[in-house]
Amino acid sequence: MSVFDDKTILITGGAGFIGSALVRNLVRNHNSRIVVIDKLTYAASDYALEPVINAVNFVLEPYDICDGSKMDALLEFYRPDAVVHLAAESHVDRSIDSPGAFINTNIVGTYMLLEASLNYWSGLSLDNKERFRFLHVSTDEVFGSLGSEGLFNEATSYAPNSPYSASKAASDHLVRAWHKTFDLPVLITNCTNNYGPYQFLEKLIPTVISKAIRGEAIPVYGQGVNVRDWLYVEDHVNALKRVLADGRVGETYCIGGSCEKNNIEVVTTICRLMDSLVPLSDNVPRESLIMFVEDRPGHDARYAMDTTFIRDSLGWSPKESFESGIQKTLNWYLAHRHWWQDIIEYKFDGKRLGNGERLSVRNIHNPI
Picture: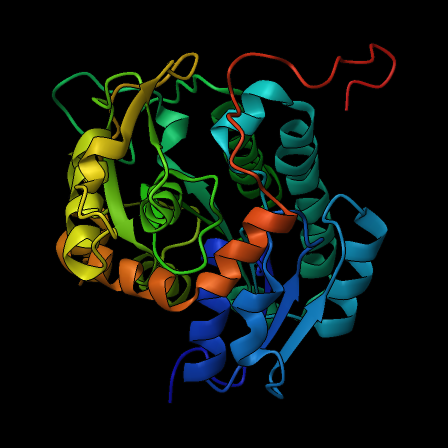
């Protein structure tokens, strides 16, 4: 019997990229009731939940975590054994153009969810209090930018450089404070860049894949030298499950793929694999489609994670190499063209974001 069996797990942001991967895994593999709260913004995907939408142990509640009274009501109604908090605005470029949504969802929304969770937890029996967990899923970007050497770890000081990472850093601090001040049993994870099926097209890897398939120009910021640590999304899901099952209350766990690659290496790898899978009609190599564009303002140079703690304490390590993970990802996007083509037609035209042109002006009387 799994530790997740006969449990109710409430997952915010469960229609997003990472959230939906966690939902599909739990619904398929465990006898647990999974309740998803997601306000279904542009980056959410009903299609990502289709494999489980009719499952008897799955429920979707289309609400905003900023609605505190609704969060109170949902927690009281479903009586979860755990809350996994993934709901967030997550794209750095959008945070540069319009940071207000990031402040609202990532900071105010996290506060509302923490308050609802604390109210719910405070009314539980002693045994249920002991079992309850609030798992907050965050990012390595809260730590800022590394130089050419060194790794982030659980003791790294926070130094966020974008509105997105600043909002996530604030949410991390709120979660930690609700544990230290109010004893709410929390867990925090900080993860590196994910990739895999169902990732929205604004992110690097799905952008490159979709443009490479169509034979379009492939934009790369600056000279493509920025380094990221890449992790296949299913490996991240397994790490989250391990933390939720066995993590120590109040602890932070750094999750990563131990797979550093600069952006241009990622792009050229995809181009070469795509050439071998589906050559362009004129046999032009896709690397010739690469187009260097003006860099993102404040673009962090390098992220990389030391995963020693989660490996030694919880026995987790990634199963997929970049080579195996990116091959699975390419195969998925090739087999699901209708999904991302609909996104291009109805949701996201690929227009450059994050060039410093602000989309909204702060109202001094209502900053959120």
